[in-house]
Length: 165
Image 1 (cartoon, helix red, strand yellow):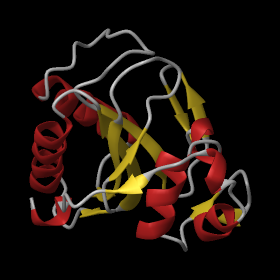
Image 2: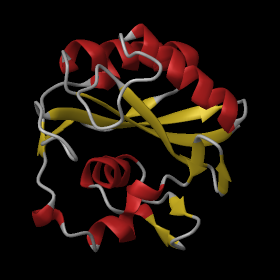
Image 3: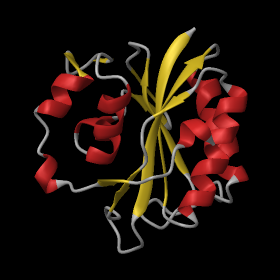
Image 4: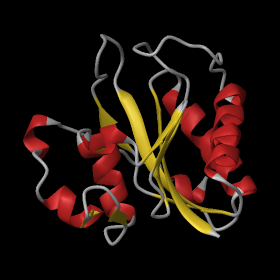
């Protein structure tokens, strides 16, 4: 079993889609845990604010199998498979860390490079698993978050509890 950390976000019917995704993740990965949900502005395009979270998933299969499962859940939330990259989303699920694995495969880079740059990924991950180790930064996620420029990347906690979904 490998602990995988996955970010999720939506800015189209976000509360509905986050709850749907969380339920699917809990059904597929018993023992899944979720960070709080955070609101932040869209990055890279104009659009409604996103609601984001990070999930800890006890994965029995490969990172490729996890990616396929995340794509299935995105589809259940109404995301077209080849949606524009910088556009509003019903659901976006990305593998941030997969145990201590490091790989760069077509369509799957782990650790996710944006993890070190985007508060909506790093902050919820640090809340959920501050002891998780980033294998290329050689630091814990908690250490990385303490040093992160949070003022440049505003986000606010929401009342939505995905652990209770």
